Figure (tube, helix red, strand yellow):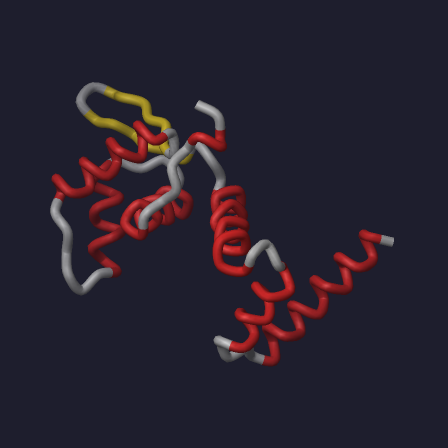
Length: 131
């Protein structure tokens, strides 16, 4: 299955993928514990198992089996997935305009002085790399 054929992540799928990206290879129990640690409304083991199976079928996860335990790992790194999501939003919401995407980010969130400094440094690095 090529990268283009991999279905987009739902909010629940993305929550699981964030755990896998953060922890690395994980069992269903480890994923469940990490997710429930952050949630007010706990989810059950069966729900996690169903989502892990779907993510595996979609091509987002790889796994290996040791005895009766499945160890899941990401098939794609977080940066690639994040980039795909941002590009999808840019295309669908902002008609492909990077300027409008960035304008929306600036106008709809509070940016700290430290974040602004980081953004300026990124822009300077990008500008220098384009020269």
